[in-house]
Length: 391
Image (cartoon, rainbow, N blue to C red; front, top):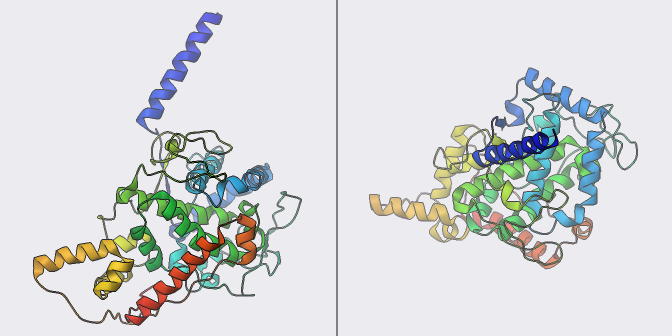
């Protein structure tokens, strides 16, 4: 009997390996939270409440808190959070096999994050003014890590939040960085931190995953990484861990032990999910793949960017500059019209990281200062070129 049991185990392992190599039997789609019907959102709320009641939010906050130093300020950032979100999603699928983490297209709301419908009573709720969130998804919940408390939020401007990073800026980051290390730094030191700090409360602590805003935020960051991967960086993994040791596709993910390479392709292995909207920037307006407003806004942004002066375009949008030069050669023309869009707005300075945030993460202060200065220079250059954003 033992021989048959051993044979059965071996066969099961081989079948599991074969399934893993071939991909997923079921792939869920992560959608923009604002595209969900009320009935679809209510089902997600049902799953999340049960997960919290059964101690899963405590479990995941404990992991994030414990691994905090291993997964921030170094190049484990993207693969670790992808694995972590998938772990959370798999637990949710124990309650509903179709459960998928939505993403929040924060770039669309970057001018006025506090005014986003995501932060209304119909979705995750709003400010707690340093105390309990009193509406939305987690109103009335008890969060049990690190000790029992209500979910806290504290916007960084009282009842408002400082602006986050624009779709145009993140589009530029994706074009200017061809290695994982550079891409990670330019996302982690900008959009990642500004959202955590803007919402505040639990979101500004090492146990930030108490707040479901964490999962919406990191699903969006993961979506942006997926977009960047689709631009020819699908198997790119370089950089170092927190101790300065080089890491690559074969390196073990902290806590999980899986190889980083196991997270690199969606729809394979345990990465049984995809993002609504696709990943191929050739399918539609490229900037629309970064943020998903009305198609007309994305098309206006594309047209405006293509009209930027050559020096600005080449500096901040090298892919667009290359494609524009090819189009110019084909048409033998180059428009000198100022890039103006009806009802467009000047780009505003995004919120910088705070000293406390930099210290908590043990970031390299010089690198942070350099990237934040570049972000301000980006705003200055586009405003000087009279670029008006439709976002």
